[in-house]
Length: 271
Image (cartoon, rainbow, N blue to C red; front, side, top):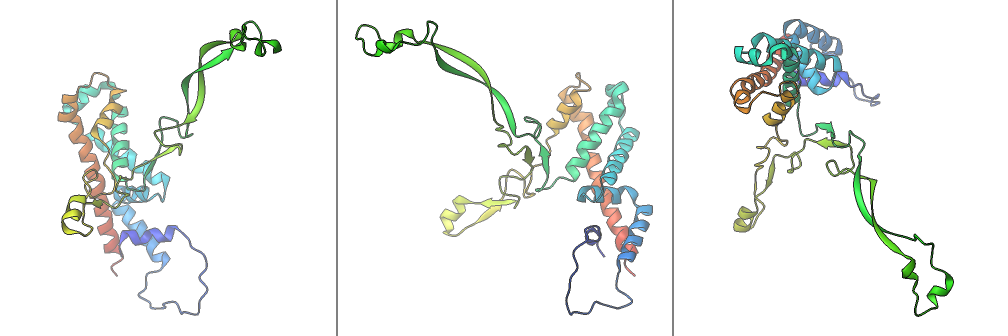
């Protein structure tokens, strides 16, 4: 039994009323067997199981446990140059790397994030300059519209007024959240217009932006900018040479441990 099949036991469904007879074979896997297998797998591959459940959104505590375990592993395996550059902020920097690594590991085309521009409200304020008419000497009297020598515009005075007005956030289009889905719609492939014109039939190619994943990866420059808030003197060369390989190792560790947990779960349920 695959580890992905255990997720349906965390999402109870409604009652299915039908005349079909449920399987009564003694070899069938019941919900109790799945829970026991999860407990056994947790004792053998705790981090991998917590990372998988955290990625699937089953438990928030498993996600926090995985991030904390990643941070401890980063502190224990951090190179000497990273420790020297971080100094007293080593724990904060490693926790930040762990959070970004887990976010990259659990990222998918359905992932969303709160818009930082509007803080999730979908509305922002912007400065707008408009021209408004004022009457410093009072409004024009009635007879001014009847006179040829005096006009009502003689009482008017135009001036530019700067106001702060609410408007829709352009970054999230007023939704308050940002989707990780690529422009290909999460499919990982786009229409090849040149090949379609030559062959006369729709031809699809791998999306160049996401590489066929359906979502773009988190840029290492984004992680670098986050680290700069704690270490303003961290140069790009130091980040690329020392910090970026550590970040990539944390992401690979999540995939390796998930694979290990999946193998242990299949071993337990192979009876």
